Image (cartoon, rainbow, N blue to C red):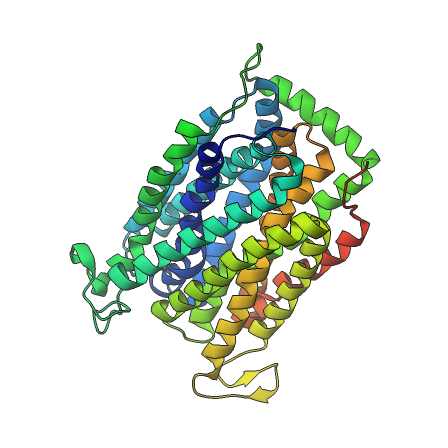
Length: 443
């Protein structure tokens, strides 16, 4: 690829990150997951366990679907029809989360099922939009494009979170939002309608901001044979057989699935940990989210420029170890201690958690942006949708193992602190694995 699409097409593609980020920010991390754990489930330990198993189910289903659909779409051409199909799942799943009333009035099974449906929607649309990257700009600009897209996504998540905290999510005791006003639309603080509205808000936000991609971003031409699951499976099997000979690509798929699973689990359980261990309110967790999104946007933007200058591999490596350090800081902090032994009191636990969150935001944004370009380098521009499908497969192959072990260790130990330690192990092993990944793949 030596040419580039026009600015409107590129910006419309970048808006996908803006459109989908509220799902990750509001649902997975800062609003709905902590609300579900604290007020829908019977207790925090059961809530973390249920949420972990639901995330595991979603991960398994995506792992099974992603590489087949990726190979099939590479053979057929256009990505937009599939983006549209899975966007419907994302929108419906998010909207249904509003039914999660406190005390489990609505069956918990259906709430978790809606979360699984939304997870499938967002993961599959991400595969197809990521695969469009090499068709939009030359390779020399992929790092900047990926970093700018992630940065824009973090800004979108930040704005959505601010809207939630200032206009919708209110303290159940005072009935007021972060800025001291009653929630808009008559949302009832006593039944946490503001927190539950994070689902419909994410759905509406996505629906509005995904439209420019369909209108202005060019799609790949349709192949004569059209989409075929059989052709997709045949192409996928050929690729899988060739992987052992493509050592750098194969190693990257394995090692990235570990550090990405650690990062995703960190996002999924960070807010839950804050609510259960540090006893932070939803609004306090939301402030933590604002800080993390600000540093995430800055990290992704700066990381994209570092990627362009030094290449994605060193950027990914450093980001992994920053996440390990921040995660250790989180696990070592309780209302009374930090670093496992240093006494603290008052507001210090919250401040320490905010600092760790800012590091996680910056390193996480940089890590995800640079990983996209490192993957493109591994496949040399060939079969990019299939590559992102395999990328999703390897990520989801342990994304259900990560939440499962968090849920399992939490259940066995009856401790949320001990329960999230598998996250640190995944991040560290993933970082070490990068020693065997080459900057420019197997070329």
